Amino acid sequence: MALNAGIKAPSFSSKDQDGKEVKLSDFKGKKVVLYFYPKDMTPGCTAEACSLRDNYHALMKAGYEVLGVSTDNEKSHQKFIAKEKLPFRLLADTDRKLHEAYGTWVKKSMYGREYMGTARVTYVINEDGIIAEVIEKVDTKNHAQQILGGVPATKAKPAKKAAKKPSPKAVKKSAAKKAPAKKNTKKRAK
Image (cartoon, rainbow, N blue to C red):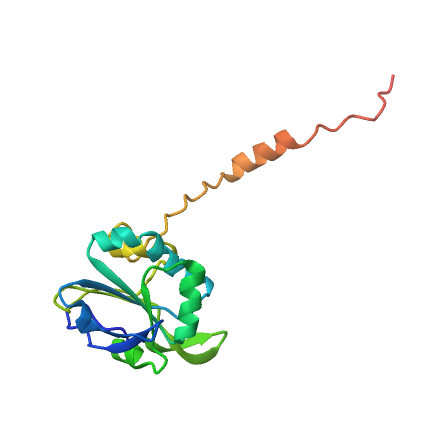
């Protein structure tokens, strides 16, 4: 289960795509977007990464450092970064310690089959190391806007207008107008 906002973010030490050690303490005094995603190069994960990539300068300007986390290895992360031209680091949490600490290694279900996997969750950590926001309903295509405040974390779908049902009388009139008039084929008696 994901952690709640308002608590101290668990410290961590993990390797990035280049095998360099990354610690949460490296970002003391900075805001961190720590986003967990299931797998490199899958459609949803690519959309999410590209939203962050396309808005990276706005995120940096707002004072955020971006770190992606999945259970993929360093080589997979290198390919994903190269293919999508990602400007931020991806952490290779192959032993799932970071996932366990943040509650993102969870039981999932697909087609009635249960399995363990990554919950798509983003933690926004403030300058003091406190979790300021937890985004559990990630809109992959607009994720950067969720972080920057442009799109609410739970985007409501607009309500569809209900079609007004015609009255039975109106239906009968409409049908009568559409039906062609029958021709009288009987000859009149003279």
